[in-house]
Length: 363
Ligand SMILES: C[S@@+](CC[C@H](N)C(=O)[O-])C[C@H]1O[C@@H](n2cnc3c(N)ncnc32)[C@H](O)[C@@H]1O
Ligand code: SF4
Figure 1: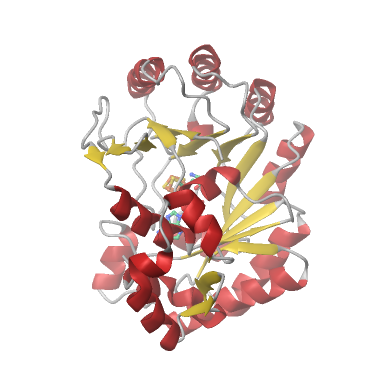
Figure 2: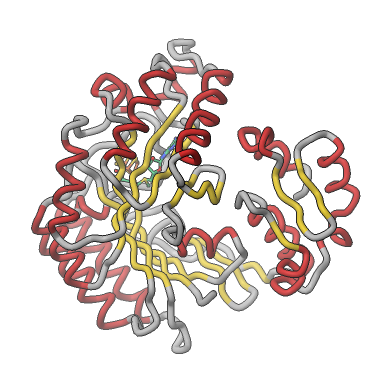
C-alpha cells in the first residue's frame, strides 16, 4: 500500500463537550497564518512522496470559508503529486457543510466525505455540545450526494451518559437508512481537559460501561446482519468501502502529516508537529528500531477484526509475531482475549470492547 497524506485543519465553530482534537475558533488572521504554514510544509514534502490516499481532517475542514477552502485545495494541487491518489477524504460537520463547499471539494478531486453525525437524537446532540440538530444530518447527506459524492461515511458516538441503548440503536438505524458506504461507531471517551472530564470529576455524569458494551455489541450485531463488514474495532463498511487511509495507519504504513498536531511516519522515522497556532514546529524525530516498529505494527494491526496472518505480518515487518511476542500472545489467548490459529492471530469477539487492555499486554 502506498503512502498517505494527512492535513490537519485546526478550526471549529465551537468546541464539542467531549473532544480533545486540536482546534480553535476560526478567525480570519488565524486562517491566513495556518494556510501559510501549510503551504510551507507542502513545499517541503519529499520529492518522491506520491500519496495513494489524502485525508483532510481536524478540527472541521468545512469550517473554512469558501475562499480559504479554495486556497487550501489549490495549494494541494500545486504542491502534491496527486496522480496515484485513489481515496481522498475530507471530514465535514453537518452544521457547516454547504452545497457550495461540497461542490468545491468534489470538483477538486475529493471523493469521500466523512460526516460527523454523532447522534440522531436532539437531546444527545445538545448534551454533546454539537452545533447542529438531527435534521441537519440527512440534509448534509443529500447535499453531498447532489454534489456527486459516491462514498460517504457517518460518525456516531455511543455510550453517551444519560442516553439509553434504545436511543443509540434508533440513531444507528437512522444512519443505516441514509445509505452511507461507511459508518464509524466510537465509544465516548472522557478526554482530559474537556467539559465531560470536569463533569465526571464532579460526579455530574456517570459512564456506564455495561451499557457501552451493550451498545457496541448491538452495533456489531445489527450492522453485520445487514451485510456490513466490521473491519476495525470502531469501523464498519459496505464491502470494498473500507477506509484505505485508516487501514494504512493500522497496517504500519507510511504517511506525511501537515498542519499543527499532525504526525508523520516516513522512511523509518517518525515525528509530530506541535499543537500550536499560529505557528507550529516538528517536535521529535525518532529513528524506529525495526523490532520496536514490528511490535507496534503487531498491536496496531490487531485493531483490524481479521487481525494478522502470519505470512502477511512477516512480509510487512520481517518478523514472526510468535518470535516477537510469543509468550504474551499465548497468555492473552489463554485469558480469552485473542484467538490464535497456526496461521493467524486476532482479537476474540468477546474482547473487542476491551481491546485496549488486551493490546496493552502486547506492547
Ligand atoms: C476530528 S472529529 C472530525 C469531525 C467533525 N469535526 C465533526 O465533528 O463533525 C472525528 C470524530 O471523532 C469522534 N470523537 C472525537 N472525540 C471523541 C471522544 N472523546 N469520544 C468518542 N469519539 C470522539 C467524533 O465522532 C468525530 O466525528
Ligand atoms: S468533534 Fe469535530 S466539531 Fe466537535 S470539537 Fe471535535 S473536531 Fe470540532
